[in-house]
Figure 1: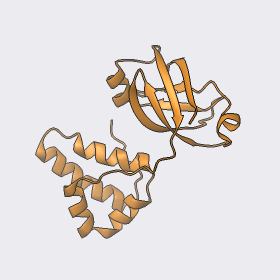
Figure 2: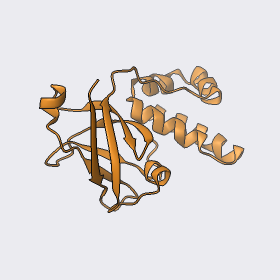
Figure 3: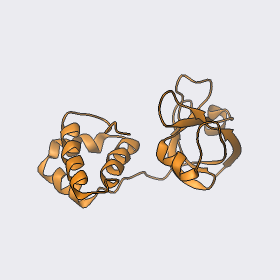
Figure 4: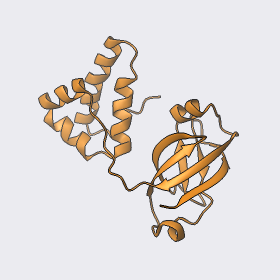
Length: 158
């Protein structure tokens, strides 16, 4: 599988605590696809499974959320070493036991969750598992079921 090595400047994404990098190659030529391409990326060695996307930008980009920026100790404006490999592996999110228990009681919420993209499922699970106190986790579990029952794609939290 072909690997792409390059350095990129992290560009700030609006008013968010995140950024993105531009992919300096022609996606259609390299991957035979025009749209989204699932990739494994390594930012200064930190692995991040994500997709190359077009977001009204002149080229495909990869978003770096706050978690990734913190992990690589970078901020928008910094340069990062990037390695990209097309990711053809199945992407699955391990559902925590407490969330799985709630899904058994709320099958409609589980049905919405199951239809979500890998990224949105991962956001929900990370939001729940990142709680530092049990009461926070419990509150997030309840809120997760409420949001999924309402059809919300992601927790929309910072």
